[in-house]
Image (cartoon, rainbow, N blue to C red; front, side, top):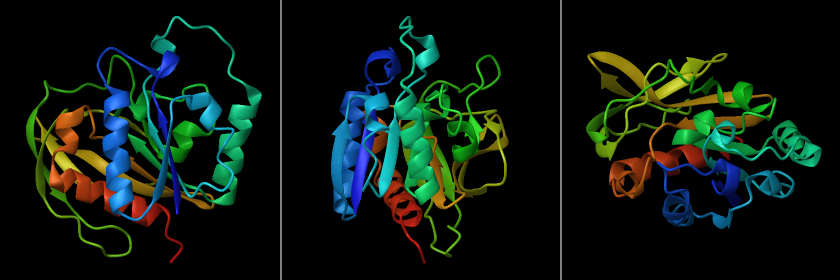
Amino acid sequence: MRALIATGTGRYADPWHPYTKTSPLIADVLREAGFDVEIDEDVDGAMTRLEGVDLLVVNAGDPWRSETTEPLPGASVDGLHAALERGIGVIAVHAALSSLRDYPDWPGAIGGMWVPGISWHPPLDRVRIAGDALPDGTRIDDFDVEDERYTRLQAFGERMVVARHETEGESQPTAWVRAHGASRVAVDALGHDERSWASDGHRALFAQLARWVTSRD
C-alpha cells in the first residue's frame, strides 16, 4: 500500500503547527502499519501525483491565512477529484479541517470544516479520548493524549463518529469516518504537535483509521 502525506509548507504553513516535524511521526505510524510512505512538502503539487497512491494524508493548514495570492493550479483540483472518483483512501489530520479551502471537493469529502469565529478549542492539555468502533466492528480503545480539543466544527453530510472528547461538559467528535463516492475518508482532529504523536493510543487510532480507509472489505 502506498501512502502520500501532503505536508503544510508555503501557503499551507502557519505559526502554530510544526507540520514538517509531525509528518515524519505520522509516516512512522503508517510504516509500522505496513504502508510505503512518501512525504510531499508541496501540497498542491501532491494533488497532481496521486495516481497509484492508496492513501492520501493531509497534514496542512489554512491557505486563506497566507498572503500568497498565486492561483490554484487546475491540475491540482482535477487530481484530487480524480483520486476521489477512483476510490483513494483519505485521512484529514487536525488543521486539515481548515485546509484545501480552494478545492471544491474537500469539505464534502471530509464531512466537516473548521469555521473561523465559531469553531474553537481550549488551551492544549492532557485529555481523555473515548473510543467507539469502526463500521467493521473494530474497537477503538480509550486513551489519553496531550492535544487541543476542537469544538463546534461544522459538519457536512453523514458520518460515523468513532472517538469523542469533552469540552465544557459537552461531547465533541475527535475522529469520524465516512464514505465519499468510491472513497473511504477519515478525520482525525488530533495531531497539533509532536506531543500528540507520543500517545500510543493516538498512534493506534491513526493506524486503525488508515487500515479502514484503504480496505475494500
